[in-house]
Length: 439
Image (cartoon, rainbow, N blue to C red; front, top):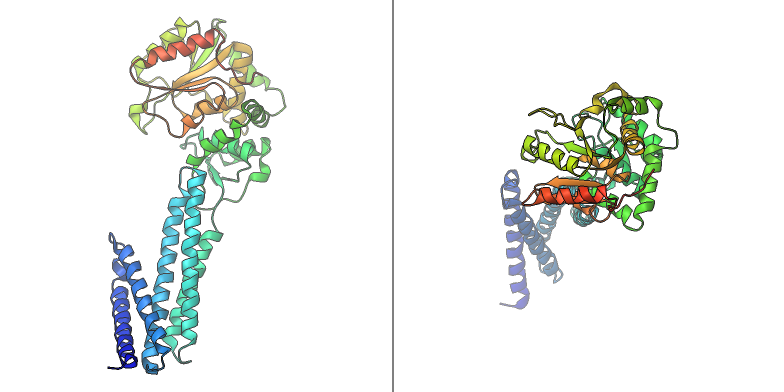
């Protein structure tokens, strides 16, 4: 058998193999959601493409029938179309996980991989179009497949082009109110884009706070698939690293503005603390949520934390969720659920709540805050109030602030943790804690 004839026979075998592999894969499309099916699909498409390209390489010897070459072209058109469609699917799936990544670095790395997948779709669409042109002009099936490949590539590219770089400022009262501090602080320190959750009870108040903070230029129209809010604490920490005191001053200027604190807030605070001793004070945050209830403040723990605050010479001011499982501890001031007061539910509700903490610092001797971790603590923490939060396990998001945000500390609820709380309270009482920016 001559080499030329052997080459011809091999090319025919390759053409039949390519067609069989492709037909088998196209018959399995409905099952691509099954475990491992996508990976197999991609490998088989590559095999079909390699085999069909081998046929065209052999065609250069001039010993193949036009029909065999045409079939190889058709196989390549359909295989590249299938690969473009698979790449579009892969880009969509990966873009979702990339967008939800917990850090900006992971998010951007994921999107670089999405871009690489999109280029695969575009390359296959280009090859499908080229192969379709090399077939007979009346080969409608190939041209239709090439158009499908082009459509898949366009859709894949649109995923990248429509990437949402904004972070969402949630305005639903059932969502964590404290998350808003992260969004606003990140925008102040890192020029982030912000979108406000529309048509919610606090949408107007959220926009009012952001515009009052000088962030109007950072607002963008709301759309789906924003960046993950998990990224925000690290972004804020990065903004503090170079110069923590300057960052804190910048946030205070943005969040509080330059106007005097309204007399209504001063009068309300004075009235609520009218019968309270003049001792220095600490905020004691209470957590009572349905999400991860094992992290909630227990009543015996609340009693002990109050006792230790009093032993250090402080008046504990209870804030956060209401005391549900017993009486308000003796010696404590109950300001839980204060934000539900009409005074703190107006159009300037977010600034008003921060102004309350400022009044407590300026006129009532507030020197710090502690309690089970809750995002509500973090607005005052960013403004310079020394903070100690309790947690059952290392808080991956918030411990990026420990050692970066002045006076921000984490204490694990493990053996001896109450003594560590007492040590911090004694430090505050003796003025040795890092106090952050004072008013």
